[in-house]
Length: 312
Length: 245
Image (spheres, each protein chain N blue to C red):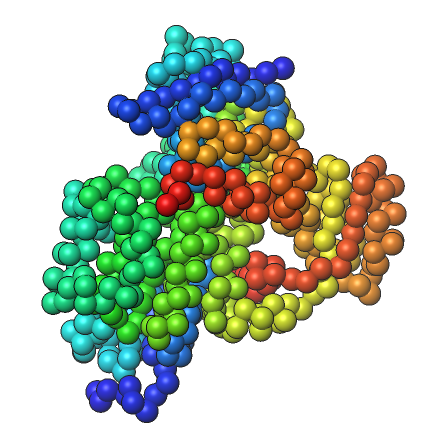
């Protein structure tokens, strides 16, 4: 296989990629094309197939069917070439717990025949958060700090493509936000970033996203494109007793679905059957108080739920 | 009625203070959200409240029992579920239910009847003989929650019960929490999903071992001039010493 790099803007390509573990399918024919220099998010719950996809792309797992290329290299035949140019941060913390922050970084640098100083500009921003703890053992870092160290280690050899498998899972909102800011900075350096996450609210941080469930891509588009594809009208409904409000709403004709979203209930409606005034009166008659209804825009999570419902 | 009373509870590991003099109360039937950044001390506090760890100083009464002097009684009176460990993967669905019932000394006859009833309610009758490892994550979480309250505890502690679960299942899970709370069970829950903080009656936010804020989500949003709980959380968590340069 010739390296396609020069004539192709695509950094990662998958065609009909499939993988099963025994009788359990993990990927059922995934097609994807990631453009050079973009942040591509793969968003879906646990068990959707995210890690399997990442492991195939980083040459750690062989697919049953289909093909995948990273920077023009075949993931099966040219795995050696791929391993030199990708950085991979697995979902589980994989650094040496008994080594210090500094030692971990040195180990990864020497594996890739480079030095920490060589590409220090890439990790400088991130490493500055870790510097005060550089003599601490990795096992004794907090969750957010561990992820930052793992990211540094995945970057130390200046990869062309970075694979981050759920870097923000189980991490508190402050550390999550910081990590995403770091990824934004790395993109500016020209690194292509594939990142998976179960948090739907992180979609807006990506240039393009693929929503994945049960080993299939439900949809691939820009976050704005996904949101504009939402097909129903959506109302945000509030009331004093949310639990009873959900029950009342679900029994109303013209209500397609109703789910809690933080402070309000996102309710998909068929406007040919019901309007806001009618519904409000109905809910008040049922004994609900402080009822507020307003039309709202769908978010990524609304879209995911709609697409998942359609596909099942 | 107070189901949890915590007074000046403190836990030190060597010279590190993981939980620093916290005090609060939880009412019967309340859904109490216990939030905090990684390393803020949530797990340590929760382990003390469950009778699994002795405090360095201070005291707490859970379900009427002193967590230090009557730890075994505390354990018997509470339910516990975590995302990391909840069910035995290599046991069948019904075996998991009956095992937990046995551990909590639910009488044989009652256990059998309740097990059948529960499987029906969860729509898992056909999966009765299935190994838990073969179930989708969402089903496992719902089963795990039901098992954790099978012995009718006064309080259930849920440690990040919805991590990684798909959006629809996550919401169904919260509807189960609402139901449990309506039946009088007090729910003590940790989560990293800030939208879930909005579903709690009251929320406490821990920073560096201390409780920095405790109120209803509505009151906290007003107090911090924030649009949602995510903003409240971020404003508070920034006070952590970890972020001082």
